[in-house]
Length: 233
Length: 110
Image 1 (cartoon, rainbow over the protein chains, first blue to last red):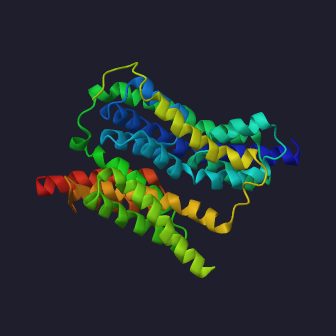
Image 2: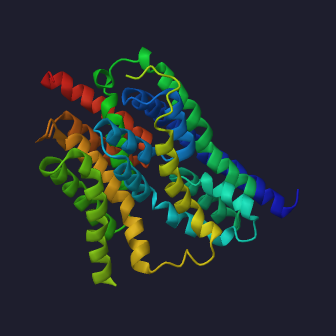
Image 3: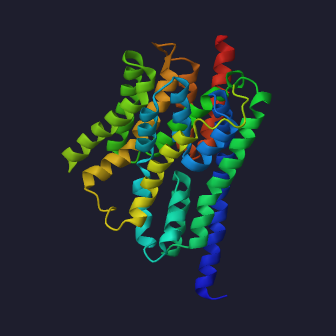
């Protein structure tokens, strides 16, 4: 085996090992989404559509939560887009390594570029110094396949499952959101965005309407963080 | 609880949400130059993640029945998030949240 082939083989083994935890999370959280979607009134086909077309965990949960409180569709769509706008950064970060790939290939890889796929792909690129197309597909499908399969399983098992609150599962979603949010705090601006986002969301839920909370927190938090960023700049 | 398998009323919503999501994931990879947005715009986009995810969690646990509440759920979520960050493992944090909320509810009789 040549040196380059050995490096590629080692990097791919590492990619697979790194992905194991991601598989576990995708299976568990995807199942919870399926269950939540059924609780929120979505049919099986609609739950599958959310997981396969929208394919963005936090945004899917948020959309179902907003549907439950009868939020108008335009507000839900806007929230989903805002929530997933961070993917612009992921794509921009990966883009320099994909310029020599065909348009069709780039379009396909972009479809799978979730938070987790981005994390696995960037680590794989860092090991190789270039993109490995098979590795990038693997990183994306590592989420897509278990997420969708477990969405179906979670929806189907819903009737057999007890009330989530009785076994403590009602805190899993907010805990996942909080954990992901804290994981994204890399500097003071992000910390300010998180704190202002949280506090303004709570204030909006109390003073305006629960359906406005996430939108207001998601808009005001980054503005506060941006103010800190601009002052620093 | 919905037992309907085939209702498709919400599929257009998934498609609309998916369009913007895909645009965010694809545009910088497909359109040359769009990855060179002004720094302030990039910074705003970067900060949306922590703000929105935090807002979802905070509104879920601190507001119940239209009132501000600090109950077992808030403690459990905070403990789980902190543990997840400490161990660098989201799964650990989620599991701890479940254990904490069950323990607190048992203690408080909630």
